[in-house]
Length: 472
Ligand SMILES: Cc1ncc(COP(=O)(O)O)c(C=O)c1O
Image 1 (cartoon, rainbow, N blue to C red):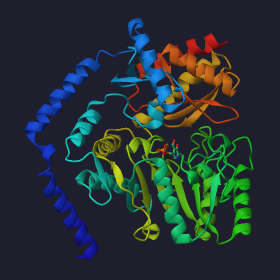
Image 2 (image 1 turned 180 degrees about the vertical axis):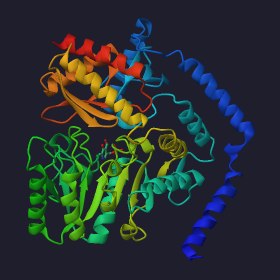
Image 3 (image 1 turned 60 degrees about the vertical axis):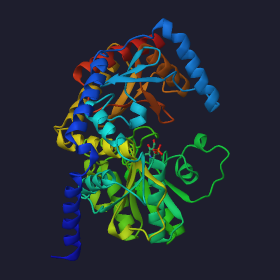
Image 4 (image 1 turned 30 degrees about the vertical axis):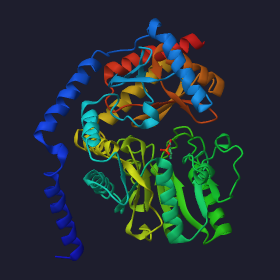
């Protein structure tokens, strides 16, 4: 047997042996965990629909939101302080109100609120000897999650390794360093309207002046126009722009980074044919292909959007976070960095590693993925609901519903920032939480939980209709 193969078998055997020693595998502890979860669920099951605030709790709640504003130096976008209780798409706030949550921490809570498996996995993690795991000293939870990620990522790509971090921004920083170390180029090809995170370099990669006011420009980013379905030459133009940049900066370009579907930039979807010529060009010129799947991971119908779009064989680097409950950079053998390039004290909290594993397990084993999976079924029903409103009771006021899987957006009213923000606040008062994306137009954005039912979509329809009609 090859040495590498033998060491993998040994590793698997060791992990199996260790599993028996894990403190949280004890039957006695399991019994207590189940009892605690059952008690929490008993209360959560009482949450079955939107509910207005309790007037008696409202004064205390206002004080709470004012305290947050004072501490942060800036008020919250929504007067939102959760009570810690919820049930599926519903979340309870500290003022006793219940909201139907279609933004989920901007994509963290894929399984909605208070999913029993998620709570159970979190408790197991919390019973560990340590809260935060690190890159120097890690427990089994770290290995289990990275192993599962690599197993699934490598099915339809050459991705082979995984490095955990604490958020999408750092996962992206690590990917950029890996690309630059191997290809020794300063310049980066990125999309117009891209979003990449909040560090200095990720703010530079992000194409939104409002997110970098006062920051210096390092002039290391070369923009490519994202797909425009109204322009038949969209694909050609994007490739031409890439070639133009290459001609000017030959040998200095390390990577081409893109969100397979624009996230903050407007939930714009592009077909495979738009990407392929650029990916071919990058391969030919040894420019790393890096998909930023921080938002798309687990949401587009397959685990990775590079699978949904069918171009996994081109991918050298892929970053994820949000749903994974930790950040992660996945990379091929070629991009495996030299020791010292990526590290950091934290690699994630133990509960985030155990819940990330459980969410990934459910998504891959319980019928969520694929053309006839639960994600596509929710997508179709949700889009049909939006189109129905746009054609009937809210005629012309909810246009261009679209997206992929559980990432859906629609242009409401006149698509201006002020009107959309006012609509979002109105929806919030009426019990429905969503968010915006894009600039011209500003769109109404839904990050829909994978546990959403047909009945939930009916409630969304009523709340959305009420809010739109109140805005007229
Ligand atoms: C595509 C994309 N990349 C990177 C990030 C940054 O991730 P984080 O906020 O976890 O740092 C985000 C966050 O919204 C994102 O949507």
